Image 1 (cartoon, one colour):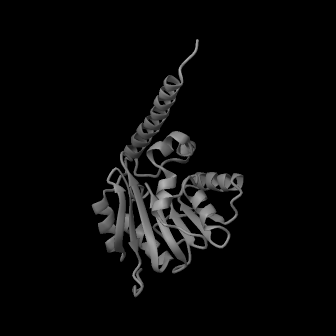
Image 2 (cartoon, helix red, strand yellow; image 1 turned 90 degrees about the vertical axis):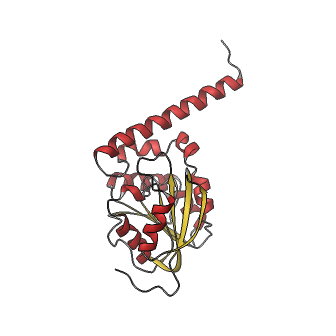
Length: 222
């Protein structure tokens, strides 16, 4: 029995969407029972191709306007679907650091970085609402579909503020229907309360990245 190419493509698309919807439903079920990040046992699903149809890592990175030589921090990198290509982009003249509260996710991040032969990436097991890195040392900080998973969102953004150099940028990416989705207005308010200045928002409310800046004349915050 033979199948036409369009039919096979349709089958592939349907299967990919089914996987993505299944992951979203499991994640939503889990999140409703506890406010927590995507568990490490779902980390493999975050690395799968179908997820990228909904949440494009390439597009997320493009929106951050990164360049070689930057020092970049991600809160909640998971298995590194975004952070590993970011590390490759900033190159050996730069560096990438991921802070995740789950040891299992950091284990996946380190293993995936090794497979990708990325040597400028560091994974730290720690709470993003507490100091984990030296202050005023990063050019860029970002969170991708992570902010709503953190019980104290304001504290997480304050730590990003402290980690960034003056004029450093914060990027917050959100996508619907993530069970912890944060609206652009909420993200803008939380960032302002941490001391950030709004720069721009790219994308629709379904999948967007908001960019903020730590003011050049910023006063120390605790």
